[in-house]
Image 1 (tube, one colour):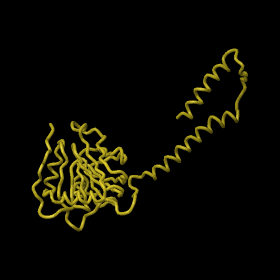
Image 2: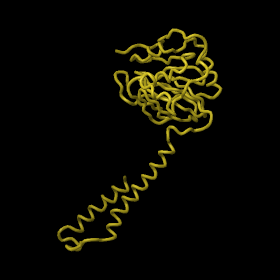
Image 3: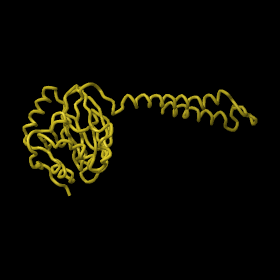
Image 4: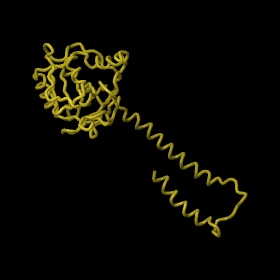
Length: 261
């Protein structure tokens, strides 16, 4: 921007002074063409547009959210709701509300959809913004290289609870992540379709909620509830051979979920 503005602010006063009435500028009423002037006024914009175009093309592919960042990524399925986030861990067989735990130094692949209106998922310190829409699924890959807790949130206005719709992203050491997963498997509460239906009701979560398991194919079923044709697209997660969690699905517990009018 400065490459464009600075020459203009310098040239305009010079031209006004030089070519004012009585100035030193030559008067050429039959002037038609000057190669230097034409090269200058067209050359600089062409160079700038070419530079920006090449940079845009390069960084579009470099930061492609679908681009894997390494082998053996942690897979997490994300469902944005009013006004909370549901995280499903198909490899570990657990689920959480408003709490995303990931291991330090391991690539993470998020598959995202919305169970309500369009929302915008973002963890500013770790991953870029990406939209989620009902009946559709998208993907976001990222890697956290420093342990700690980071705030993630929805940046797309979606009603009364928008201001409080955030979640904690906990980046744990690999061993601590494994211990955390094992501790969640003993929480005794599993998430089935009936429990998910309760979560779709607009409400604000005061504290994270944890589930020791969830209904197999829940993410696919959520997408299919809006658009059955999107379930078997190339980027869909697919069904898993083993059930998530152990035992029969327990009745859904709201925990600290409270409906906001």
